[in-house]
Structure formats: C-alpha cells, structure tokens
Length: 281
Image (cartoon, rainbow, N blue to C red; front, side, top):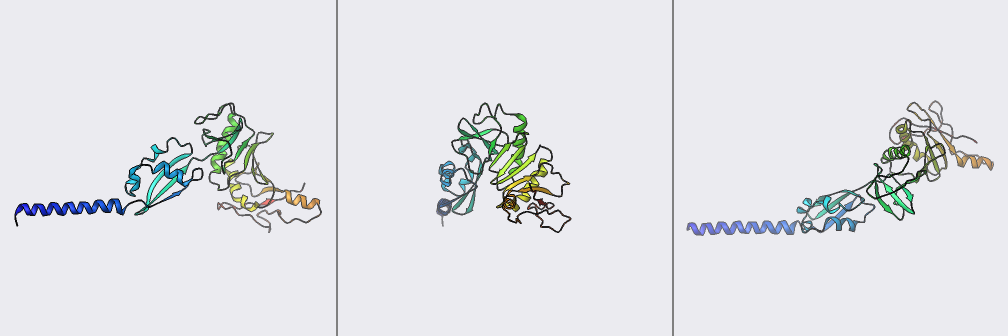
C-alpha cells in the first residue's frame, strides 16, 4: 500500500470519527426537556424565555455556558439563575428570586422592599407571602433606591426582624407599630407582641418554635419580656375568654411551666421547650 493511499485512509477515518462526534454532540445532547425550580413570581415559561433564547441553549452541554446574569439584568425580582443538566437531554433552571421583607402602601400602590430597604418592585396588588408593613410613612418610593423619609429606628427594626423571619416558611400577614412604637406581628387571628428591640433574636426563635402549637387558635402571644432565661411565655387565649363569657369550659390553653405536669409545647428548632399560660381577663 502506497503512503498516499495510507494517508487518505487515515484522513477519511479521522473525518468519519469527527462526523460521528459532531452528530452525537449535537443530536445526542439535544435539549428536549426543561425543568424550572425556585420561581414563584415568574412563570416557568417566562424563566425559559429569559434564559433559553440563545442558539447554544439547544444543546445540554453548551447551555451551561449561558450568561444568565446578562439575560436577567433587567428583571427586578431575579437574584440569580443557574443552568445544569438533569440528564443528557434535560436542563434544570434553578431560580433564586429576590426576597422581599415587606411592602408599604404608598399612593395606592404596593412598594416592595428587600433586606437593605431598597425598593425592588412596585405593584398594583400585594405579592404572595410578602407581609404588609403598617405604622410607618415614606415621603418617596423609587424603584432601585432605598426608602426615603422613613423613621430610621422603625426601618432598622423592620429590616432586622425581616431578616430573621426569612428562616420561617410562614410569613406574618402584616407587621405594625403600636402606640408605644413597638413591633406587633399578625398571623391570622394570632397577635404577636414583640416589645422593644432588646433580645429580638431570642423572641423570634421562641416564635418559630411555638407558632405551630397555636394553629387554629386566636389571641395574643406575649414576647415582650422574653429572654434566654425565660422558661415560659404568656398566651392570652381569646377563644377561652369567649367560652368563659358564655359559661363554656375551655381546654385550649393551660398553664404549662416546666416544673408542672401540664402539657408542654416543644420548639421545632430543637431549642428548649416553651410553655404557654392563658390569662383570664
């Protein structure tokens, strides 16, 4: 066999291998399915349209090189999106949306702001799972800028508590400042009084543990004087008070301190258990 013929065979073999590789790469890794996770404000289709509008998005390997930061830079509620492969033909878009601390009603609109107090989006209707903030006023609200004209002390309290509440799956319906300028939270028919800013970490930790035990009840949970050394908290059971007024015996809440044999409410975060005691008016 001549050298020229040998070279020709080698070139044809290499070309054939390259062709097979190209076919496998573009056909074998062709994207046929896309999964989206972590989105609540945007629909799956909206996320797909933001990210998968480039030719390389049709290949599950090349899609990993998509610049998602560039494609979502104008989206107010997107923090980041990562692209990964579930299998050879399926992509996973993991969305991290910006977390809103709460919203303030301003000029008939809902001004939603984040943990830095920066207005991220202004909407006509409240966003899902974003609590309303009452008792504070703003002079101006501009998207992309920090809230202005607001009481600094109150804003700092809201931002501090809001960061702590991020670990809770259930957010309060609203937060308000009472006549003493102390923060109060509302979960349906449960009113949670937090008092001043002192020991706020401990107060929120207690709330996380005890709130599930109050499901279906109504009344006031007193956390104003809660410290690390507190062995019990007080819950004014409104249901019990109503039953007593009508002559009915209530068993919703009893005094349950650790040194008694009463029912004990355990914290879901694994910390020391908390007790509640009803207070008769």
